[in-house]
Image (cartoon, rainbow over all chains, first blue to last red; front, side):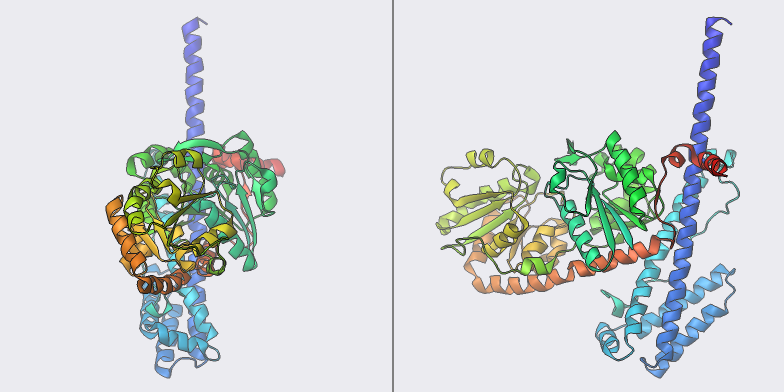
Length: 184
Length: 393
């Protein structure tokens, strides 16, 4: 083999190795991003579940007035009645629960009073769960957007580096904690 | 929870990020968590038992000041060992957009990562180091925290992705200790400044420039200056009529810092910029000492636009002197500010901050799946992991 041809072969091999390393590390990055999405989704769903449980509990034990209790119990029941696969309906119902909680726990001083009553501790935990829902959705959506950005790159689409993972979608819902829960 | 926290800067050099991590770690431990901190350190014998050394720091000019950073071959090994031994539920890195042990940790760690952004850097500086470093590191971070609105905007604009706003904390209990430095209170008013004395950004020159006017009215005034830097050099440059009115305390212990706050009638924060949050303001307020600060956005926010402390035009010694003189002339106003400041500081108490940080941790962890150290996956992606799996079969 003559000198230049030998060099060209070597170069070609080096380029191929570089491309393979690049592709595999990109696939690894995507894999991690998908994992982040998965964990984020699990955590968001756990946070939503916890909020429903605590809201239901608060409505059941009589620390709130009957009208508020009824509203909350109803909103929770409507979420539970949705098909989990129907994302739009589920998050719409969760948004309704947010709206009900926002209306019931609008006043910080009232909230302080309720929490000081016997059994009021559940409301303090409900406040915590509302904050966690907000944080959980923000982190989940961050992961989704980062993943979608990567997946839209040409190199990922051409080489199908995403494997069999489904394209993740952001969760759109109202999640701002009630005014009365601020600073809790 | 088992929590690992990574400090990017030398543990033995006083600084906002170091203090933040120390107080956060202390509060989290008090709340029943197991906490381990990984930090670069010059003197490994001087570390508290919860700090693991990450190697020796090196001095690097960064973001307009001299930062002592640590990255290196030894650090990588130490990070890996720390993660493996720690078996953490969550690893919390700080300032992961600068080339530090924080970024290194992001690269090595696998699992729930939280990152806190303290500084809001300027665009040009940020972009050069960011695009390459931050993207690969922050992409692995599932929960982001910003300590100020400015830091949060910085993250949204330059890093991509939102952050939860959790302001810095102050330990109200520590700063409430009503002790003063020996010999204080003295005759005549006392002012106090703390910060790196040889770093122009901290604004000491503005304060020095304002002093003659204040001294003209209060010939018995003293300015206490605390903080690292070459005291002799700064002292030598003082105008002769000012020199007797300035007392340099040098690098002070935590206890003496609290005492110094309590020894002063007014705390002066003449910073020129680069501050994303005014922790010194909160420390002063928690000590009950009224604050006079430059009107930087971060300071205005903490001081409620002047409700909890006085503001002067940033970098304007005449305005500083004038505001300072009127504060010194009004003991009632000082007493009022002292009370308001104490109440304001409680909103930033570490117990509140730690609770908010706990919520972030809870939002990223997976029960039973601790953080692991896996550099091979970082380099060779899925294939390396698959090979390792087959290997173990």
